[in-house]
Structures are given as structure tokens and as C-alpha cells.
Image (tube, rainbow, N blue to C red):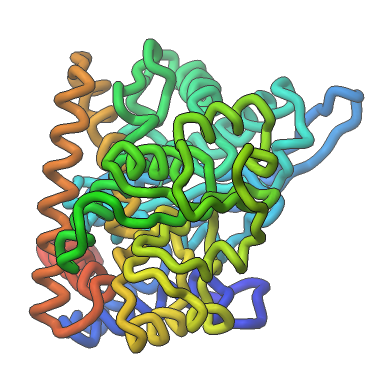
Length: 422
Ligand code: GLU
């Protein structure tokens, strides 16, 4: 399949995903034919989305939905709205969902969607019309048994409510299981909102334990302060670690004595940006990533740790809240420097795990208590961490490639057992 843009393969997320798939497949000797299936998306759709803007003009946006795999169950994965969305990014993100769902062993394949747009420059009405028209364009390939979207960058429970409503209007029946990450009270699950950030903190805790580092009082640096980074920082603070720096899209704040995270989150909500928070020094993204710390949590976007800056990283442990923040080239440098990386397909899997619970609850028509949801998620993540480390030890490889080995084995097994219809 032709890959688009990004001359530099280190910055092309799909090529990066392929490199890891190749490495894992060589360790577990995947059948050559099955490898070819896994290396390409199962199905992808690009759509033009005409939207009437508030000023009366008509704009046409481009949207994608890629289903990398439906071997283990319906495709599953978020939808992101961003000016940077491109097809290779969505392909990579959809494949990462396949591996992520397989690592935590939930019965889903992988998918991802994206619309090239700048949601900060659009009104709620424009976003609603964009979402509804996009949903209607995907009708042939989505549904609770086919492909179940969720929130991702710049989309939220409101976006999912519009998506669910539009789908339900077309199918003539309210279908809450068509999408996850919905508002509580409209079929959403308790715990879904905090699941990804909490999951990142749980994997950080397990990683610290694995590396025999203290369970309290470690220094933590977080890149990103959205639903993943902001909440991961808060949960690390709750676990009595010291969050010394955090950033948003405008820059970062640093205090070596530790930040009062609940106050930082309130400040961010009131001011719309972190910088200016009393008692902190402003820092930029490069300074933040290079800070001396025990745990670094990249929770912003792809391609943050590359061959250009990997050698500057002083963290002992990296826990990937974002999808694809570290390149394969950077992995080699980090490994040589003894930095332990808890990979994205494990570290941020708490979100999709609770999405799975939301889908189950919607199909049962019976809702669980928050404690049930979060306890079950924690158990799955702790077991998955053990499975990943066992796989990495068995194959004498990094945690990342160990996680890929585990995931690829599970997806390849489904293909082999299902057989080929031809
Ligand atoms: N967008 C999230 C992710 O990258 C959640 C996906 C989902 O819940 O389906 O894992």
C-alpha cells in the first residue's frame, strides 16, 4: 500500500508501526501470508464532508476511517479532529488499536478515524454538523458488530452523543453500543473518562515495581495535560509521587519541589493555559523532555522522542500515554541507555478496556458501579503488564517488542483458526 507524505520514515507513524511488527514477527515466526494480512489495513474509507459554516459558506473537509483488523472482533478505536490528521497517521493509529486490544485481550480488532479540521476555530454548531455528516458517510462500515468509534484527540463525549444519535436515526433504533465514550446518562460508563489516565498511572506503578524503584516519592514529568496527561499527572500525585513538570500546547511549567496537581488542574481550567501558575518556571517542550526524573509520561502526540532527542532523555522509565510518541530509532538509543519504556499499546490501554466494558454494559442494558469498572480495568492492566514482561523475557527483547509479540500471536491465531475463505 502506498504511504502518503512524510519523506522521513522516522516521522511516518505507519512505517514506524511496520518496523515493530516486522521485529516481533521475526521473533515469533508468523506465517508469511498472515504477516501480509497484518501489515495492511483490512479496509479504509476516505470521505468528503461538506459542512455549512455559521457564516453561510460551504466548506468541504476530508475525513478517514481505517479498520486495520476485524479478526478478533469489531474494529475499535477513536476519532480525532486535528489539522495534522493524515492517512498514514490514521492507518498507524488503527493498527496500534489492533495490537492494544490484543495485548489486553478484549474481543476487538482495531480501527481509527480522523477529520482534517481545526476544532478550536469551529463553533459547536459547525462541529455538530461535521460530526453528523461524517457519521452518515461511514454508515456502511460502522455499527456495534462492525466498528465502534470512541473519543480521541479533540473529540469528547458530546461528539460521541452526536455520532450515536445520527447512527440511531438512520438505523431507526437507539443504539448506544454503536460508540463508546458517551456521556453518563446516555449509555456512557462510569470510569470511562478517567480510565486512560488512571491506566497510565497503574502501568507506571507496575513499571516502578518491575525496576525495583520506590512506590512513593518518585519524580514525574508529564508532556500533555489533556484527558490522558492531566489525569495521569493527578493520579501519580494521588499515589504520592512528585510531579515536577507538566505541559500543554503553549509550553510547560516546572517546579523541582513538586506541583500541587489538583490546583494546577483548577488553574488550567480557569486560565486555559498552564504557564503563569504561581511558583513555577516556564519551560519549553525540549527542556521538559530532557528533565532529570524517574518517570517521563509523554501524553501528547506522536513523534516526540526521536533520534534527535532520545539521547537527552534522563528519565529512568517512560510510560507512553500518547499513541506512538517514540520512534523505533529512539527506542534503540533509550535501550542502550538503560531507559525502560512501557509501550503505548500497554500503557494507554485503560481507555479501550473501559470502552469494552461500556459496550458490554450497553448490550446487557445493565450498568455497573464505578468501583466494579475500575477494579476490573486494574486487574486487566496488571495481568497484561505481567504478560508483556513475560513475553519480553521469553523473546529476550524490549517491553515494546514483547507487547507486539503477544499481540501479533493473538491476532495471527485468530486468522489461522478462522482460515481463509477463498
Ligand atoms: N482513543 C483511545 C485510544 O487511542 C480510546 C479508543 C477506544 O476507547 O476505543 O486508545
